[in-house]
Amino acid sequence: MGVGIVGIGTAVPPRILTNFDLEKMVDTSDEWITTRTGIKERHIADSNVNPSDLGTEASLKALEMAKIAPEEIDLIIVTSASLEMIFPSMAAIIQDKIGAKNAGGFDLLSACTGFVSALITGAQFIKTGDVKTVLVVGTEVLSRFVDWEDRNTCVLFGDGAGAVVLKEVGENYGLLSWSLHLDGSGADLLAIPGGCARNPCSEEVIKNKLHYIKMNGKEVFKFSVRVIGEVTEEALLKAGLSSKDLNWLVPHQANIRIIEAGAERLGISLDKVAINIQKYGNTSTASIPLALEELIREKRIKDGDIVALVGFGAGLSWGSAILRWKNIE
Ligand code: UT7
Image (cartoon, rainbow, N blue to C red; front, side, top):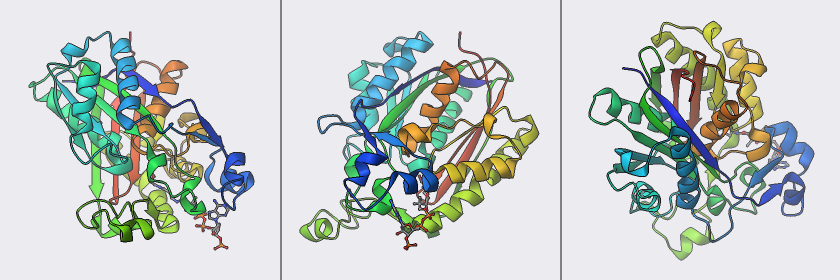
């Protein structure tokens, strides 16, 4: 059974923070950020906006495109690297906000690989025949977890959300194959170490800024450059395909240089790669749907196209999902 995307929606908060704004906040420059990351600006949520708000807006748009009523959703899977609370799940909060009164659901935690993992997970539920309609949401207010005094990280991240509705789309369409990996030996390379069980909230945690994103940028960069092409090739192979068959690469938007390295490894030109990092920065679980939605909206993606989604990040975690695109009517 082919399971694919029948609706997509996104949401970003209206406030924009440019590289020039950041120049006034930390010792950085538009030139450094642009050349080292590809980012020009990012959207930042106001203090009264939570990840579930952005996730709700994206979900309602995805449902509208899919022409599906909230009551028809069987399962909601929300993935986020900027949790609203440890519990309840954001799936529950979004379920209530969109009125999906017949849905079950849960949150899935896999940092920047979250969207790929959640999409693959949702598709399995439909493939078993147990459910018909799954809503997958990636939503972030990462700006709450950024140390705005740390130039190594604060220039990278942004807020936003993306949601897709998954349904049966016909044989040979939709999710063809996938590949997921973990290497927890790299857990310390990218983490929010404080505020949970290991380092519960305390004056010490706050003094040491352990409630903010800590990243060994160089090591995560090397890891990302290695896996982005590797895992996409691996997933393509499982579908009996190669990078020559690829019409679109939709990568997690972490750094333009990582994306370029992935395209080079796969031997594809950059005009086959969805890139919008310049506008949003790294929005973790939201970056893949934000990039995919643009391709769909601009009608650049065609029926039958082979599309590779690829995510990578904290865990360390990485994964790819290969889809044969079914046009959304
Ligand atoms: O979403 C999950 C996956 N995340 C990623 O994949 C992110 C991976 N990492 C990266 O994208 C890059 O490592 C960064 C963009 C974070 C950093 O780029 P880099 O080329 O690895 O720079 P670097 O860490 O080697 O730093 C080079 C220099 C350093 O100065 P010194 O020590 O050479 O004097 C930094 O202090 O650039 C300095 N620097 C900055 N300068 C101006 C670091 N951040 C900034 C900044 N503005 N914002």
